[in-house]
Length: 228
Image 1 (cartoon, rainbow, N blue to C red):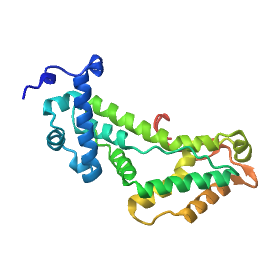
Image 2: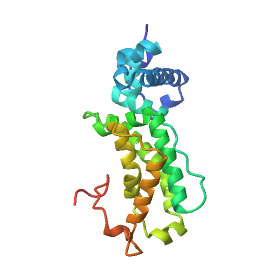
Image 3: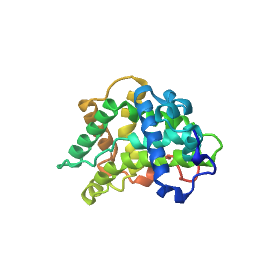
């Protein structure tokens, strides 16, 4: 068939072209179906074009390659992590949030697949690939950190625990849950979440005083200015 879309790269004006919007949706529909049913290995250019009935050249016009297509598919399928509506003490709120996130990680394997794929860094030298991966990574980070920020930045919580480094708090609380799921070591249930939260809160105090955020963690975060 004639591939009218293969003559030039996609531009911003193409976002309004109904034909390109339809072909992009068909490609993403096919890719997300293959990803959900067969995993990352199932999402190939050949498979996606065959399922979507969209020409290979059109796929490359929209996405450039499989890395960008996978990033867009993961982003579309990423389940939203809801902000906790639990009330009560900071302990109760953190337990409710961590338990909900642990359940989501355990029941939605795609979450772990997304994190594993991001950690591999499957990006070549194409800047567009890097941009797509960066967009997905930012979305994942925001989805997971927003509910923790909602709890840990409350004035009464800061009064109890001090000026918390929320990024490292997420690592301390959610990191063991993700590690346990990735390795298959165990499943972190409600009781495990209670223990993680209690250990986190206990570590926030030294001699009954909150630990200043600046005094701990030499954590090298993205954008933090390099290793220490």
